[in-house]
Image (cartoon, rainbow, N blue to C red; front, side, top):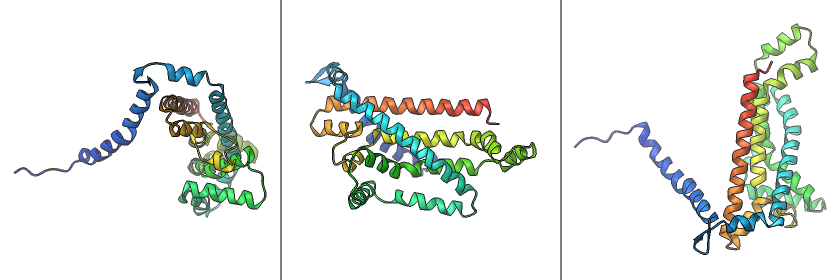
Length: 258
């Protein structure tokens, strides 16, 4: 009897099977349901979605919330990551920002809601944005910290030798060289923000519905066709965001950072 040999390819089979069942199959079902209505192939679900003004409005609101959240996370995350790279204990202090990620997503959101209520803050768009920033700020800090900490210090030293002041060194060396981290951080924050659900419902007391919440609601109401179309729209937005961010990153690298 020949002995079974374990190869690297053999270890990949369980992963491939998992991906086929829990990733590929759901995507196929979404694609099929998007073109099915009453057991027939049709574009009715697409017509229902694109003719529904409330759904389009929800999508635009979600994109706006994603843009605002990403901008705030970048505005807060970059200085934090930059300061952490200047300290010897920076790698340990980064853990303070990643610790909340170890707690269940729903528990973090519920705890945030309790804080708002304890402070007598009215729940609405402001609390939703704060909750988004709180949940996704670590996803901005981590790639920025990694990018900034990997910058060769000789670039800054060369700029100083050429007479550049601290601001000039930052604008002409540090900032351009950290663009890959910025692109990665924007991708890691914007994409989940526009597709998330539960945060807006909990932190606005169901007064604000984002696109992810709307998709969840459609499936809850057994409107699988329209819900599948909305899911396809979200998938397309995710793919476009990744492509645009990838092109921006490649353009920066090919153009040169210094």
